[in-house]
Length: 144
Image (cartoon, rainbow, N blue to C red; front, side, top):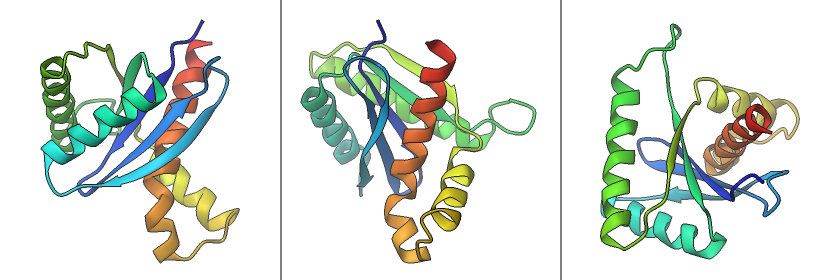
């Protein structure tokens, strides 16, 4: 059985959040988290983990064209490592999985422009959530 997974698409100012259903069949976007500090982001992610009773965290890692970790991927990895430390302090030990998210934001934007026909302002509010959903969906398809 696929563990309930909380997916994070980490950006500079926002984090897209998606969660798998209890059976591991679907991925649903749940929030676009805007945050001012890393501590605030960690606290809110912790709340989502409890609310959805997630058993693992999936973090999108923005790899470059050759599949290597560049500057942004290193930032995201540091964020994930710091999140893991925060969760341990909160008495929550949960596995963390890294997954290539290179094209999820671009794919999300194409969907929102083409299919949903959303304005730039409206896209900005949902693109990270959609990218997290696409990230989780690709992970689930590869593992089911």
